[in-house]
Image (cartoon, rainbow, N blue to C red; front, side, top):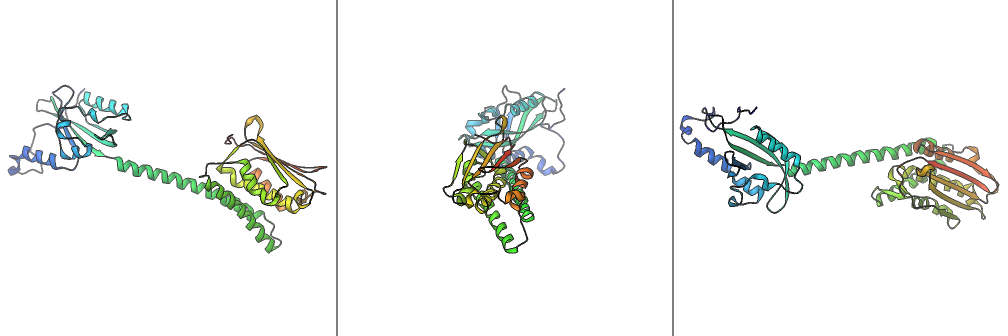
Length: 344
């Protein structure tokens, strides 16, 4: 059922009008229509295809068209390649029902520039209830949308920064709690070196725009300073998600420090082999750390604080598994990281 409870072309004197102004009502209305800063058009509902019969200066300035280019045309000329057909259908349904329509639609200016248009359509009926015109007002929402998108992007960025900061702080908290505090000087030095390892990983992430880091790149960054030419690295090109780079960096740092102080890299003939591959069923990451040439079991067998930190990072932070075995030729450590975010 069509509703006629909308504007009529003629009617009672508005409450804000005076009798002196009533005689000039049409002229005043035309002046107001023309001079208002809100873009407006009027279309003829009695003519097929609802042609524009009035378009004010603000509408022409917004769209870039001249009066001659818009008069007599349906407003659909403002539509373009990315205009939503759903929004168009909503407008058509409102016109068919002779009711008011409020919709936000992507329109296009004469030069092809898109703009978001908050469109309000209102039917105008005569005293006999027949539809005469449609009044349409437009509000350019492009800048508002841009600011809204920036705010949303900023919110996502702040959320990500907050997540990253909490992740790093959790690692630092583990470092502080799990480091051996028997000797204050050694305690301070150990924490400093561990935080520096995190900082190197952080710098690598920043350099890669917090996307993904190759396993080999991360391992070499943390191990090469201790291993020099006595370490070998082998494995496919697997990319690590940013979320696990820093805890894994600390794991490699601790393993390298232990090897340099107590293991294979502490003796002249010792060597280190690090291999990696996708985990079981192609998911996650499998790492094998193998030291050869050490004369005796290192302090890893005594559950030193380096062992505790590595275990905490692998098992608590990364939800993985670590297994240490002493073979005749040296220390063997297998690490499984069951993340599904790795890419090759």
